[in-house]
Structure formats: structure tokens, C-alpha cells
Amino acid sequence: MGYLDDLDQLHRDIDAAEEQLRASGAGALLGGGQLNQFELFGKSIGRLIAFTILPAGESGFTHTSISFTDRGFYFIDGNVIPGGTNTTFKGFLNAHGIFYGQGNGMSIAMTQPERTSGTWLTEGVAKVLPSLTGAGTYRGSMLYNWAPNGPFARLNGMPAIFQLVIDELGFTFGTIWRWIEPTSDANA
Image (cartoon, rainbow, N blue to C red):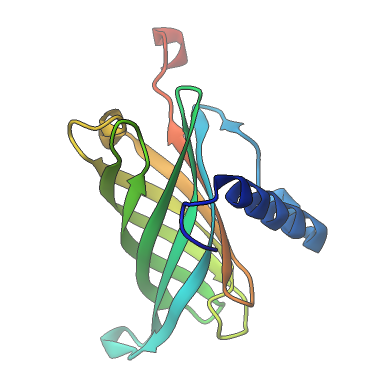
């Protein structure tokens, strides 16, 4: 995974990661482009940069922190826009290997004439594999705070949902769906 300087290679890398997940039997996790009132907003590949076991504290549960960086594409208004994210999740693991966490991150999108950026908060859960690598499938919701005058500002008032698959080598494959507002009262 590199910078956003070779977009054709990034497309090939995302397609290869998706195919590898399908071949491993995890393809059902990838989903499609639209879920009820959600529309595909982004796909990315990346790398886990930290998985840390933290003190249990008063709760008695093992606390963990994971951080990753990724590069990919945003899909909006018929456009494919390159971008990337840096993220940290913190939470705890219960006795069954279920991770409950919260995170935050920073994202950029290479929109024209200049790029836009945003921060976000997330909450989610994951079934973590018993490998001490952070590998697993993470799912949850995101609340964006894109630049107020940027092309993604309209997303600030709507939640998004995500799925992040981390393999045992620390590679990530992420998908984000954004909420689509109903177009009539019949859809409300």
C-alpha cells in the first residue's frame, strides 16, 4: 500500500484484496453496493500499524487499542474520489473474544479543485480471532465531521456504517455505506 500516486494500482490492489477474501471463504462479509437506505460510499485497503493490550482497570476486561492506515476510494454523485484514513479504536475484549470499542480518525479525499478532509467518531463491535493480532471483522457506525464548505459536508448530518476486515497478517479491507435520506414520506 502506497501513496495516492498510482490510482490504477490502487484499484488493482483493492480488487485483489476483495478476491482474496472471497477465496478465503470470507466473501460473504464484503456485501454489495446498497443496503436498504444505505449506498456504497467507500472501499479501502490498508495496514494495521498497532495492536496493543492495555491494563484491564476496574472493569476486569482486557482493554485493547488498534490503529491502522488505509487508502482507497470514495463513491459519491457518480464520482470515484481517491482518499485515505488514519484511525485508532480503543475498547475491551470480553471472555468470548468480542471487542466493543470506540474510535476516531482523520480522512482526506482528493476532490477537485482542492482536497477536503474530515474527522469522525465511531462505535462498533468485532469478533476477534484468537491470534493476538487484532484480526477479525469489525462493524459499526460512523459520525462524520467533514469540512463545512467542502463537497462532503452534506454527510455531516447522517450516520454511516462500516465493516473492516483485518487478516492475521495485519492487512485491512474496509467498506463504508452512507445513509440515503428517503425521497418521499412513503419511505420514512
